[in-house]
Image (tube, rainbow, N blue to C red):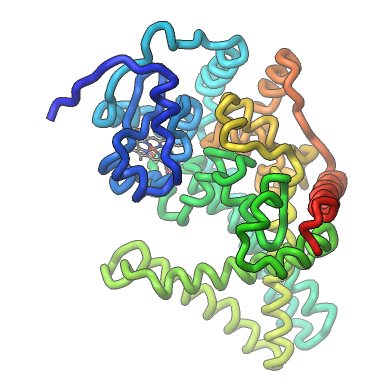
Length: 433
Ligand code: HEM
């Protein structure tokens, strides 16, 4: 079927924004328009049931999606666009690229020329060896000093670190940093929530990573939603004490993610389609728990084994979630409307926080200490982010865009300060009584 194409104005494109950004609403709408390189595409109809990237794309309706399209897709995916092509921006609606946008494109070209999209497989082998060394040392300590309290603490911390590092490795694969073959990367895990965060970092109502109510409020927008909460009493308590409660919450984060992954896999209907990915995932999760818990129960008394297993989750939770939190929490949060006035690359910079580079920080944070660069160019392997960073710093200097880097502890202080400001604001507005 040939689609009739025509010219569009920005007013028409913005008018196509749905009331809710859900697949159902968009599928049945009369048009859900995005712009990529001055061409207009319609995401209504079958798009969301087909799109391999899921509903992430819907966050871009009414906007120029050129940046996120370039960031997420393999260059050959540009060929698949024509199926959704419905026209062009009218000539008087085309904004010539700003100097900032031209400079970003120049950096993209430099990254290509300098082969910074290519991964060093030996680097990832080294990361994998460190993970195995951590696992071996953790169980070795239990074997040599069974039921010794200090040994239990050190061993659980080391295994928590190994789990954190495995998480970063999966993250690298999911972003196609390690393998160019996207099927290989896709085997590393589910990522729709994470990609949505990448498409709209710190954008209230889009970014799932700041949708943490009733437990934590990261912005004024979050407390505006107080009236709609069904669990107001929980929110009142949590928000009031959020600058203190953040740390206990971070320590149980991994436990909650682990439970979530078990429940999600246990209830997934697709499990019956053997050998579908969910089935493989279920088997692998089973193997994971057999060796992780089996080793502990073999080497320790039952009570100590349970204490050790919980401590592993607590350490891993702290190691993972302090890094996640440093990436964006406490940085500016924007409404959908405000974000739509910003270029994708600018949004990546102004909402991100880098953590001081160095051998330890680069390894411990899985390269996420180069958060701004990672958001601008998510498929650049982490070992190439330091080189990318030099170019981004020059860009920021030239265009007077704040490039925010802190130490690990100073970053955490900023987060606590921000939570405190929001808690006080909620108190002032009488929301916490
Ligand atoms: C008409 C518009 C679009 C078409 C035809 C399209 C097509 C595709 C195709 C073919 C893939 C799988 C191959 C690949 O990864 O390159 C994909 C993946 C993806 N797309 Fe799109 N896409 C569109 C718009 C968007 C937009 C606007 C966004 C983001 C805001 C987006 C986000 C993603 C993500 C996150 C993935 C998964 C990438 C990954 O594996 O890491 N897409 N898309």
